[in-house]
Image (cartoon, rainbow, N blue to C red):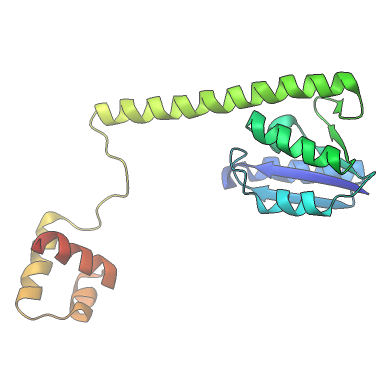
Length: 186
């Protein structure tokens, strides 16, 4: 049986995922496992379903090495699991096939580069966050209320207003009212 594993990291890459599914159709794959999740995460539901479903003499197609894994350890573990089941793996873009000894060698080299690329992206994001914070930027969600509004919520509460009344008056959820009171009372 011919399988295809497709993955994109986010909703923003929806078009790339769609292109992978179209590639699977062109290759005549009978079953496609597609998901939107980071390749650095090992807990990927569709990948795990695929690993359980494949059997001896099946062929698994993947667009490229980085779609299967972004970590050399994960990549090797996934390939080992597939190899133990005697499943042939073909990476379409790189034209690598696990049945071929030179393909196996090149796959390991490509997996190393994929892991290297993921670590560069992670470092770049961390550095960018640090620069943003040094320039005075703030991370996290923006405040839903101003300090003046928080004081008004506290004053109304101290005058006997209920949570329900505070929610309706200030247009906040019960949890938001609770957080405002907790922060201002303490």
